[in-house]
Image 1 (cartoon, rainbow, N blue to C red):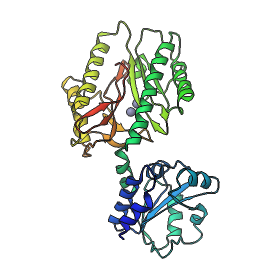
Image 2: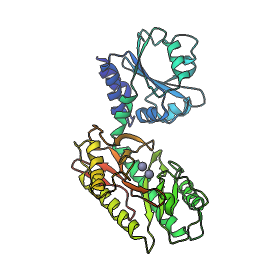
Image 3: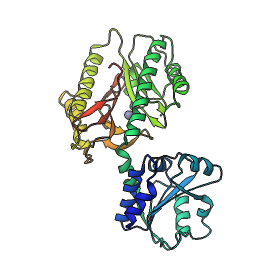
Length: 363
Ligand code: ZN
Ligand code: ZN
């Protein structure tokens, strides 16, 4: 039996990520590595379904071993009975790690780990040569499973509900911090809290695209930009909306209409086979043609999953091809320093022939 087939068998059972884990094992083998060690919590979760903050996963030679400590091993055995669980103390850096008769000389590792962990790896694999395999895992994570899309869809739906409730609760006289707190508390009550710190920008504060909510008071006549994401079932949502005042300035009105059009054009264009860079270009070239190219200083979007920022990056020049099952934000923005800022962000899932917009809040 090839290592590839063995890995597939080791990863099968009821692991909802068995295909992804088998694909990862195949990449490790394809690179000629004896094994790969995965430390990243989100990476481990997306390969095994297990969320654990003190664990590492060893994949290689047709084996998959989940190392953790006694606090977590009963829960791991219960929730993921298909996994072989072992004691994390074996990776204490004091003696070389052995796995039966497996030779462990070419080891894959994530370049995102701390120096201390890399030093430990060098001690437990004293003769090994190390190869970065971080990109292999994050590439696989970019395409979501059906279960993951369902979880993200549920998070986005909750995000829409919280936004509707928040808008009804906002009153003139509230500060940005007050408004952010309203949203945060609803996210804790109805979901698993914020996916990232909610951004609330009153008036010209929106010109700073990652402004931290402060004591600026909303007078009810200024625009408000809110960028929010809730975590639910371990997955994130991400959405930006703007409260447009009854009588916006002519410039705000113009910018809002252009950003909305850029958002709509990118949504209409998104489809499998196109590069993430070309998707960015759809919105960017539209804003450039209308004189606001320089004011759109960030990328069009990013993948969303267990982490708020995942692959693919819908950024200038990105050669990543969009594939069905990728979840990506479409968030053009225009920022005029000291004056105004508008960003409109939706989360979409790439389908067989285009994309489906998950965010349903009015814009
Ligand atoms: Zn956002
Ligand atoms: Zn975003």
